[in-house]
Image 1 (cartoon, rainbow, N blue to C red):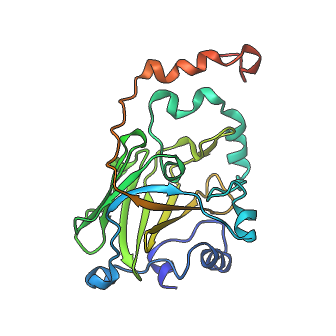
Image 2 (cartoon, one colour):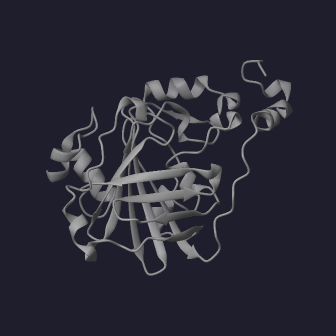
Length: 262
């Protein structure tokens, strides 16, 4: 109940189902406050450059994540989401206009990322697209999100809970590939919300991500990735050139054009 008082439940989903799903998706209850900020013992050491690793999965996990890592096989799109997915083609993928990757897919790309913990915030830098994100920690007087914060990466706030970092992000911009960035793309709306939980055990960092979008999906979905620290610094990303970004589209065969428009 503490979570439900703090964060609104998804529309159109019963409270019983949500609580049950959360229990399956994230160990323990979702965050209920910023009190964990006060205890240094509750703050994990996450500062490092992290590299994604593949891990052995149980039979149940393989059934949910058949590709061998934390990416759902299917996406529970509602009628609106299905209609929009069918309307989009490869030419509408944001990456062809130099739009950077977003959560959760950016964690699944084979590029490293870093975490810094200066105190009142957590800083992420991703090699992929040179994405940089600030997570404003509760209990330090961060401002509330506004309409002007709507963006590809959204507005992120976070807190430490039971030795883990929890990050909630809202204010995402509409994105044709915001739920699934592979063909066929699955779009996300401005109602997209993600909750990430970062937990470290030894040299293994686990990032569990719950994605909900009541305008596009019938239920929320889970992504799960694991990383290990590396000593090498992040590689500088080459700035994206719009003309070069769209160049691959010229090589799609005419018969494969969905709408006959290149």
